[in-house]
Image (tube, rainbow, N blue to C red; front, side, top):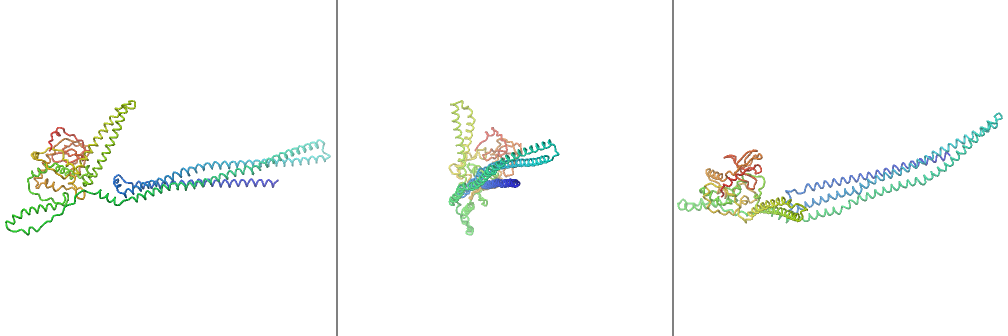
Length: 605
């Protein structure tokens, strides 16, 4: 009996140990799944970080608005295409992270929760069966101890009965009582034996079922669970590789695109673009004439030679002046010596040419203000570049006009639909928008005409536009009957040097006609200029202006000034504080109140 008891306890202990080992192993497997999930998650973070850095790099080197003109070069376009392909390349790494997150991380996270629940259920069933077997074993032990105790009690009762039955001194009643007690004990022992026997049979049946049916099924389920976990791990590893393999063709296309744009670079075309971009349109300067300084040595003392040499000397000096003036705006060029003519004749020549007057005023304004921003008419550029800029500006304005016209046509059709079907909308609700579009089209058309005029000046199709007429003094009123001379040189070209840069020195031709020889004549010119700019209104300064540049005047906020010249489209208004202080201020800094009576009273040239 003790041997059977020891074997049973050993089996139960071995079963408990196996459950503990299986529990540790399956838990380690689940921990491994979570560990691999964490590994893939960190891989996706690396892919996203790499893609983000690649995108930032591509964005950092994308062309700015001021660099958009570089797209005309093939090597610039190739680099920009490389940046775009690199951006797509970064997107593929984002696809890797997204696919790994959805196909591996999410699936393994969900599967880990499922396998934990399944493992818990299997081990719960195993512990329950083990506890049931242990409870049955304890009950069997209790029945066995009871049977053993009853048997001992029956033996003692039988011995006591036999002892009293053999003693002659004991009464018959005591013997009968001992006999009944012995029979009762034997009956109890018999009942305990039957109970122990039946429970033992039941325990053996349950134990056999436990070790041959229940526990094997539980172990089988745990084995299937573990095999599924291992299989799922293999599938995840395969998916890990497939996610990378799926994007390889697209990455290959990105690299092929970079190779193609690199092969499309055309050095000859790029160099031609550079030549076309910086072509100024100026004619090369003529040959430098020979300056003969030896004429003085050939002179004679005779009166005839002196008289004959004077015209030649004038011609030499004239040729010398012409040869030294290579370009009107070279800073080192000297103004040729002017013949002494009356100042009124020079003003007559200057004022009879409207184009020269326009150029003079434009030069004075450009020299005095020294603006940092480029003029609206691109007059700071060489002729060829200026023509291209003006043409591009006209094309942009025409595109805007076409957009406005398309909107107008669409609103017109909408209004017609509303008129035919009033339930769809009010036709009058479209009128404000149509009026606004009409105003926009009118403004754009005016602007387009302005730029077309400048373009015509550059191309030489139209004469240079003259300044708006102004009231002149009595000195110039006598010249109104003189027909104006035609000036073929436009103002923008007169302000350009052969290298295409804007020069701040006026033309020697203009200087020869304008610059006085004496201080008295200079004062006379200034006085005449002042008489041409009378007061045409007043203005109020909205903001303070320091007026640090030459030709400008400083104003304070709220100061009232006289307007002597309106804004000519360049954003500056000429004002006067008193008899001696005048200059230019930004038009946006002042509020102008023009005097209609004074404006109507101005006499124009």
